[in-house]
Image 1 (cartoon, one colour):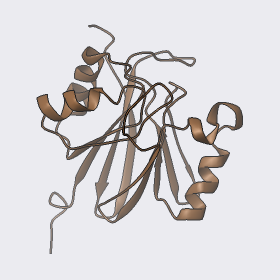
Image 2 (spheres, rainbow, N blue to C red):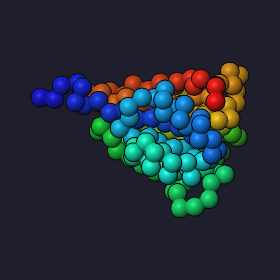
Image 3 (cartoon, rainbow, N blue to C red):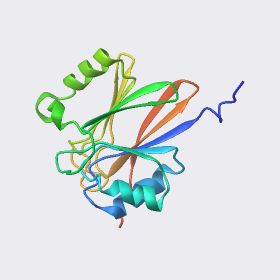
Image 4 (cartoon, rainbow, N blue to C red):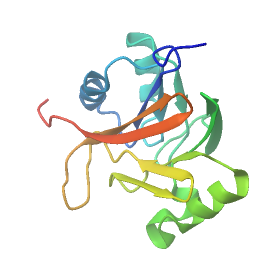
Length: 170
């Protein structure tokens, strides 16, 4: 039987980095040791920096400001959980809010939906589905306007998501 420490998977979540490598360094410092990182678009060229300098596997989707060969959506299975990654602009989250993402999660059985685009951090559950927007490491918006990132810990089949505030110093 595995002990809980063996079954722990730590997943960092960032979005909307917009080529601000200093903000990515701050996020990775706050997140600590990770098993992988999810980049949710608008700055996916930064993925190569993370993979090279930090030697962390990165799953990435393209955003509305990205060009290149990154998919618009990605499904990843980790720790027995099904994660859906999207930037969010194809779901019209600025116009329709998170309703289309919720319908998508229910339809496809996603345990966790990760999205960006709004630059506003958000964490909520709808039924058994968890939704996390890590906000932006570089250009925060919303009432609090602090750079943020997300962390998901998968322990013993359970999901422990959180939003983390970054120190704004460069």
